Length: 166
Image (cartoon, rainbow, N blue to C red; front, side, top):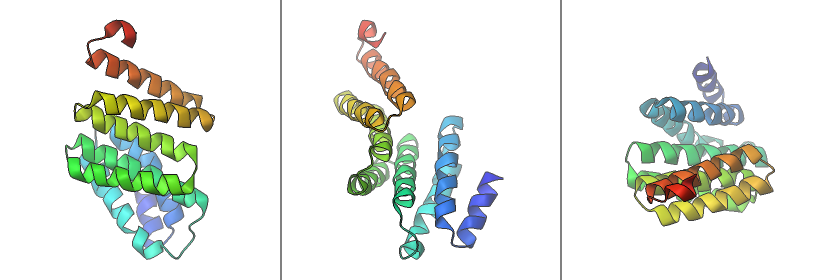
């Protein structure tokens, strides 16, 4: 039903609604391993931006776009589309920094950290997780900060430092 609602919102040029639904669905697609479906749907959603640039571009709409770009980059990384993942996450960083809201930036740092883990760059992953945690705390999202701490444990475990991971 949510996918159908997102499609209807796009058909009716309600990108604000479509991006909000895309954010929720992206999380579902990542967590359930439906990466190809998520990749296809988020690509369609991101392509709709060009038609909607003149319509409402309020801060919340831009924040949604940052989160969708971040999740699209994460899915591309999971699909091992390294260059595309890098480009999507770079775009999310640029838009997120321009927006200046720590919440969406926290997610971009987290997606970039997972991309870095997949690429075997644990130092970059750690740096992004620390930035993500700081942004989540600044946005008063303790749950997001807690996820970052768990992911820092994964980084330490990957380094063979199991005591620090615990």
